[in-house]
Image (tube, rainbow, N blue to C red):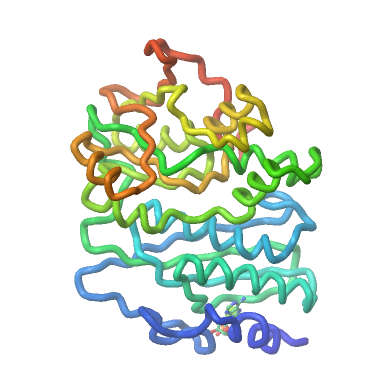
Length: 319
Ligand code: ADP
Ligand code: MG
């Protein structure tokens, strides 16, 4: 199978590759064409996933397709952007039809769930890796930045943290699957659901936001630095799922919630008066702390005493 036959059969033919919406022209020409409505800006983000670094190799190609698009699209959620589409630069060791079919099917399923369209890409031979670039749109001036947190704001997250990190020993084959808890955690690792609707609901309300990819503490540090404030996290208020606590135990569950990566949920700061309407509309808003004058992230116990931060988020190139 040649490069063009492969692109046609597995990607151009996928349901998510149909033009429509803001996609005027999709796969097949030198460029895709996007129509951005007047008064809106393009939001663009790119993510690379490398076999053995960002996902185990070998792994289920359907789940990989889902996960690759979810982790990339989550950046649009973090900005409060509405989804448009994505490009896929795919490097594969060989054109294995079974692998490509399942990968494209997983990608297509996540694209349907997120309202994303595949608009182009590149296909090359080499060690398995992929780079996805996602495109979204947001009204001018309404993107959620990391830099707007104000002393006095509440610090919130969009759901229970640490599930994906809790699944890692199963993903790596160090712990057995088979229990209901393990299955729930694995779903959160392989099929995170980008909080696109929540991100858009936070426009004009949240003072700062991002999606948590490297762990709560590490990502809160990004907001603290960009906003020149201190974020205080009340340890006891960090939401943890029952599945995670049962699977990992309370102490390890908390470590995963604070330091584990791959959550792909939103963290955001909010003036206190914006909270009631968001909660009454049913948005998943969990208050875990507040913003103070100062710098960095501080973890406190129920009495407000500082707790040592043992584990930080994952960063490449640091030991
Ligand atoms: P060019 O040589 O002009 O860059 P290519 O031959 O690489 O174009 O690709 C042909 C068309 O197929 C382009 O529209 C490109 O965006 C698309 N394409 C290539 N690889 C992929 C892929 N993995 N997924 C989706 N579209 C792809
Ligand atoms: Mg090309």
